[in-house]
Image (cartoon, rainbow, N blue to C red; front, side, top):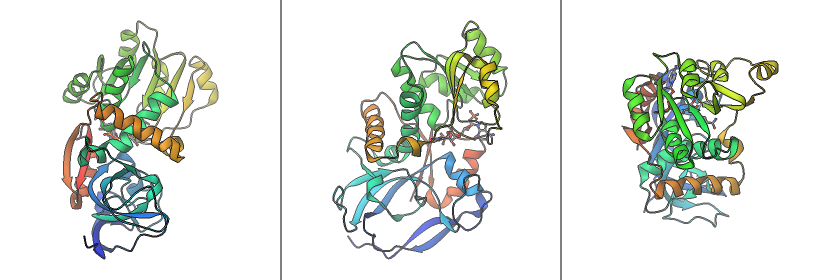
Length: 329
Ligand code: NDP
């Protein structure tokens, strides 16, 4: 196959709203040593892409956007031995630039995808699936019988987490915005769902747990939910704040953790849990295993042409999506 010397990608030169994203013609260089050239078949949309675009997580500009994709290896640079031309791979780490028809990428951050998993599923499952993996198996290792509160349970990470938590034997309380999203979370297996836009959700969690509180709260919503979530925990419970969908969480005094019952607070990132090749493979293979076995179904509920990524960002930030969103080159 002929490899093009030019391709199209979404790029941005200044931070801001979705309007800063541009569909541009860009040069495709030969892969450098250690790199592969990938023809992307599908790209995953993640909330972190909006933080890069807005500047909450700064990137050097101008920059490509997007961390996640699935595609075919079309060329390999010097020193790449683990992958070959024709392999189907998925990836979800820096450098940003996944929103592209073709791209070069470090070979040691890509993993092969089994035939049983299609391109869209693979593009959607890596970042949100590996995040779920490290949150529920390695940040606070959830055990059968644990009570878990998971915010935004109908979202990308949330939809995967609810299914995986049920498989681990936890009792899951999921929050979501509106009746339709609550119904989705329930259908995924959540034992209890709370519409946190309409109900006093802290009170409801205390009622559902007979006043005891949950063992762990996973909170990707951030500003609106993190602090009140402390009141949903039992003594020595874990508050895992892992995202900023509603904005960054304000400062928390260590003394507050003591007053709330000697609770634990952590603010993890996927990069810190998949920093070595061994950890990346451990996490990716665990995700592929639960997906291939049908334990977790990746709900790709929305697809957009890649060039319309700005609209996908508007819909994600406007809370209009459920499950995972995939962009198609
Ligand atoms: P989601 O598909 O879950 O979308 C975010 C959801 O958050 C929305 O659908 C919405 O659900 C809810 N939400 C609540 N308040 C707001 C608000 N003010 N604006 C927008 N959304 C809001 O996204 P992802 O699955 O991609 O990511 C979920 C979270 O996990 C994000 O915060 C992300 O940054 C974080 N994350 C963190 C990682 C890490 O390693 N630390 C890795 C991956 C993701 P509803 O309408 O039901 O409230």
